[in-house]
Length: 445
Picture 1: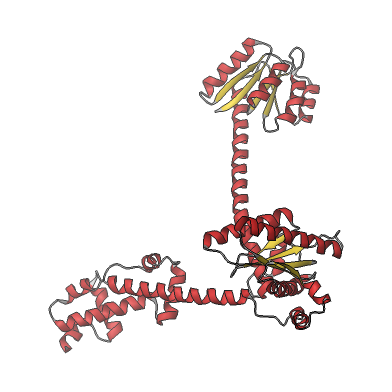
Picture 2 (picture 1 turned 90 degrees about the horizontal axis):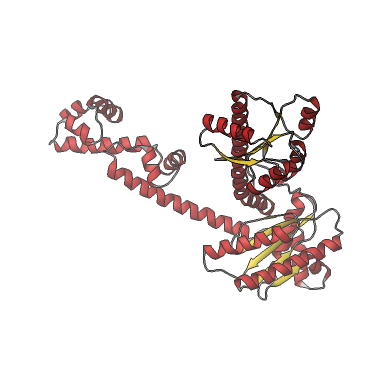
């Protein structure tokens, strides 16, 4: 139900307008009356009407004054001005305030109802648009971490995908300018629920308290974050900003989850290759704090006289440290998926062998193993060397041959038994597979 404010100093005008609207549009509006401009403002602030009909010529605060004040306070309310005089000055003032609806007294019923219906349609259109916008924003908010993770993986592994890193960085508003990588290596967590909690807290803190960033998923107890350096920051300011951020992250991990976190900080670099280099440096730096937690900055390793550690740091800086947790984790995931796929195909094969004499479809089998039909068809052929249809047909014809050899059933009965409702079609398929029709085959045997 919509709220309709009627402001007019004539009670008969207000009541007459309500009667017209209620008869033409029963149950659509809840009516609010005001007999002057001051009451119109007070009632509008209290009830926040969807539509307000204001008479211009009211004593004290007139309709235009009330309109000027209410337009700022109630930006979503639709206003209709009513007057007994066709003054151009009124119309011009109304237009300057953004009011398009202007009715002259005595107004015809059709004009009043038409105006209200048009305004309701505008309100509904805006409501639908807001709902769609909120749904879109909700979907985007869910997709953002996935897109960020994809870009982070590109920067970490240099994998070939359909979208380039520059495209994704543009979509995510994360220019591949100067920046640094940090790696957080968590000591351990119990289950997937803990993993999600760590990821959510860590990402939320970085997004809220850090500079522009993209955050990877939690892979093999590690999480990578790429931070963009603001143009106004000097390199020294940038180093201090990151140090403060990782100190807070380390404390967050200890306080929220009771676990030590080893954090490595890469040097400041530019571009896709530079950020990948910073990532390898951060990985190396994090390994030096694995036992006691805390953080390590790669720049400090370069400037220190740490013997073998310094030599390893130089190797990492030159890109020689190529085997990281991400590569091993991705390989492990790939192997697990292959095992899962083979297990699913085995279940699908058993399902087909048990039901091949029914009206069995590829979609039914794909649904049984929870796979997309197109994808299932593709991997089924890759694994067994024949299509789903060819596999089912072979099972049916082999069963038919076995039944013919037993000699207990007529060919028509055999056709139904192996899943063919049309004996003629069965005969054609049988001949295509064996080279002879079933009648001749039966005679030979």
